Length: 113
Image (tube, rainbow, N blue to C red; front, top):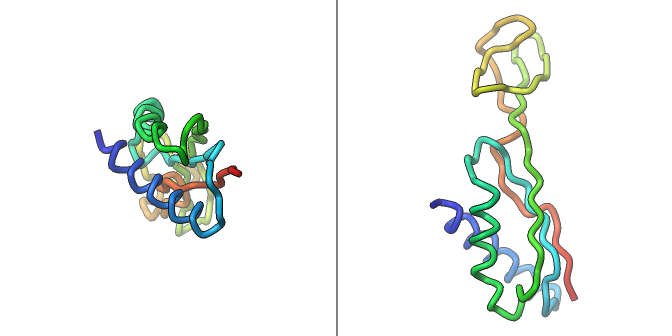
């Protein structure tokens, strides 16, 4: 379950940012999870809940926004959704595709007092 190690990194970043901004309680976290991370949202939720005994995260809500895998053809510059991890341009069939989105996992924002 790599979601726990991912969540440890997220929680560490939240602690650091909250301390820098004098936030004592986080109420909401918006996490963007790209499909290529292979992170399971339910497992991320479960991992986040394990930190809710800490005062900073008590009763905090984790919202997860899934980000699809998108590609850009380096030859014809067509932007498209990558389905089933087929990295071929549907417009020109070129294999020269750049992954434009879907491999990130990041904190979009958080709210707190």
